[in-house]
Length: 261
Image (cartoon, rainbow, N blue to C red; front, top):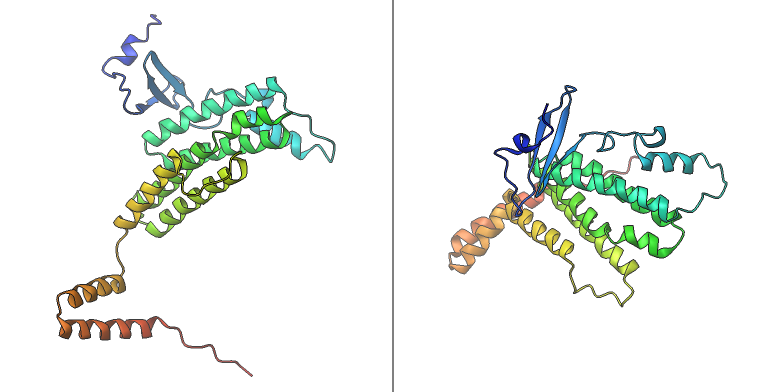
């Protein structure tokens, strides 16, 4: 049996302008993810650790360390040295490739899961790395991971016929807030809220798009019609619209709760 992967890649050209991923059925009968690269492809497991291994008997290396942390029973947790951090970084890279693939496949739940995993790796390293330079090797990627997490959360809320625009907007706003808080905490220079990073720009554009796409409520449509009527000096229509708005506002005001005594 030939080990040449050319037949696997036949008809699936590499496109550097986008992430190309697909679902395939493995020889074990399970589903796999394939990510197209310039020199071939990566094949990833859809659940657990992407390479299918169980480091030290745990589902992931992160699970191993978190278990050790929980069971240390007050004893000092050993510092993560360069070798330990290299192992964790290898796992984080695997999860990075998988959440990129899952985002391209519109599997937003998987993206949220995998970005959370990598953010937890960052938190672990921040707590236990033997020095700040080692910790920063991980922490520098927080804005990107948090941005992907917020994008996937927003997309999950507005896709699959859910159309939960308010929740999507909140997810993006929280992502922006977290990224700005990160830079305020970690930037060596004086923090400038007017300077936006690439990740902030992506989320700001997504936020603007969501607000435009969000269906307007009846009161919002009435207020727009009122402004238009005033601009056109159609005062009779404006008066009718004001009455409709007042009536709507009265219906939305809840009656004061009676003090039962």
